[in-house]
Image (cartoon, rainbow, N blue to C red; front, side, top):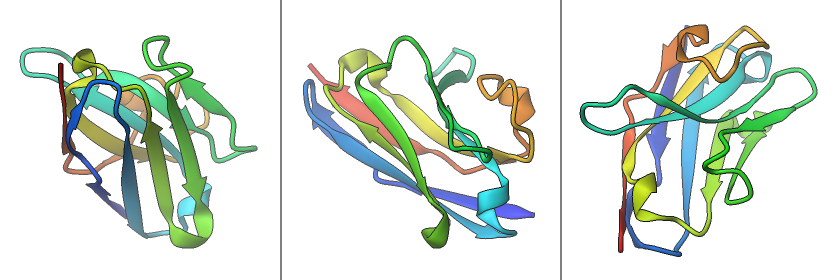
Length: 124
């Protein structure tokens, strides 16, 4: 069992930056691949970024590529999402997720564990 807790969300102006953190407790976090998803009211949860447990390969949605960076600190059991040059369309609840799988990391059903979410609001 893995428990995930996100933090770092908030209100920021367009062009600004935020760093989200996802702290994990429970089993050895380094064995898990991790992902970030986001959701707005009335829409399905959308893939943002992922990092694999094997080799630390990273994957990004086209909409955030070159603006967002996912990273992990296994010693701290934490995954981060650095978000730069934020746009109003990035406004959403952001969720951290973890899975033992190492493929199809862009698919929400791949993930077994989810955090409670953190709100990110970008004003224009």
